[in-house]
Length: 284
Image 1 (cartoon, rainbow, N blue to C red):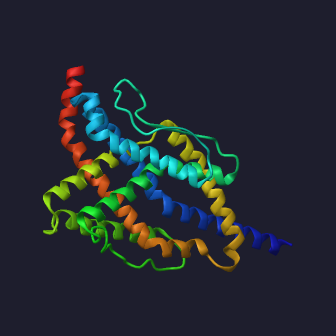
Image 2 (cartoon, rainbow, N blue to C red):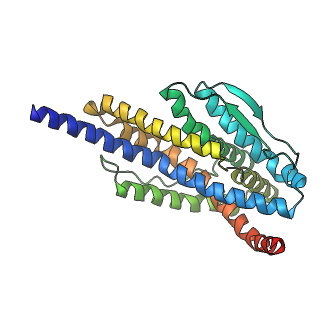
């Protein structure tokens, strides 16, 4: 009896450890990037609205990012069979505290609660896809190709694996930056338009209190769902790790786009920082 209980405990522990590693490796960087972009996006928005008239800022920069942001929520809401109650993609009214919003029904089961995680991060996922497609259209299909494909070795995903993924992403960024700014086939107009789209979308990758609340609920539902899957399948194969290895090229491309957007947004925030200090001194 003791050996049976020991086996069960060991099996559950192994499935739980694999679940935690898989969730953190797949979604940990995304959550970190979400909060970094959220902080930068809010800083840029506040500084630019003070610098320009609110309506002018919304017309020049806010419309595209806000629309993609809200459509990201809608896209994943529909995927997880959630009813969309109301949508406002964009407004130029400077007195409206919400330039855009989406109201979605609450989930009724674990699948729909799991959707909260992806609905909350929908603006990042759809935003990255749009940036990728715009780069493909303006700069060519090779803009985000040539990413570092250093193989992830080992049966278990450890800190070494995380280090390899970070190493691949950093190496990949040099490829992307060179492809955008150093490729002589890219016209200046195409590069500037691509940067405009990237900045507009990246600076709108902010998280509302409702988004953060949904992320929290969805994250726990995600862990439960992956844990149940591992419990059901772990005895004849670690399919979660196999899935991560299989999706690695897509993973690299997605985070390459995300980090490029983060870099461009960070550079703009640095340029706006002195203006922000002057604005604070004027309001003091």
